[in-house]
Length: 315
Image (cartoon, rainbow, N blue to C red; front, side, top):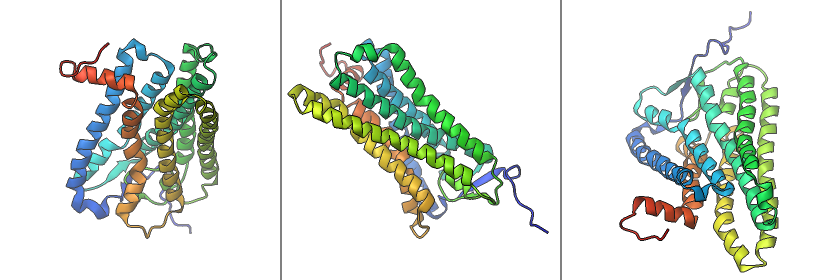
């Protein structure tokens, strides 16, 4: 007689065990998070509203940057409020539905980061390498299509992954992380997860293919920019921050993916937590700071907004 299996219909709650060994420092972590999360929201919202409220920023490069900041707010909303609640709660649990929603929000946001950085690289390639054709190619309709692609492609991929995950029969309910992660849920399956694994790796390879595309475009950009002082200045101001953002999100996400699948449990839980959180900690605050506020025009407009009387900046 086969043992009864706890299938997906009866697993109503998951236990998140990532905080169990660090609860003695939970008030320190809560204080840090209570300062960091509002700061991150403030930086992104500042860049977003600066771009929206001023017509001179209604250009493709700034629109894509605005999209990157909106996506940062979207992705972190799936983690930080729940994380702060768990830091003060005795039991760290999340409902089955809430877990799938958290997976969808966090990982569709990460995929949207790759898509947005890709269209930003394409925009910079056109602006620097094909300036005479730029405005005829990067029309309002093209910008709109690029924004749709940035959101719809990740939503489609994650929807398929969520559907594949929801059909799994589960034999456990403990997730050894601070948040729900799709591979952590799949590992609880009683049976084969081959279909999930194959589609998951297809999605991962597709989005790392975005990274390859960006680096190829940068090869052309570097060849073009080294020929003139103006080109080098434009590359340093708009492309280097973009490249830093790309490298950061790529390394962080690659590490999270590889560690989730092949990482050793002998690593201390605190170290595992930090490594799992890197792509939720750094990119959302790094993007508005090094890419948004690093642009002279945006930085000057922000200073004008907050220090209008103290700082004299000509219009």
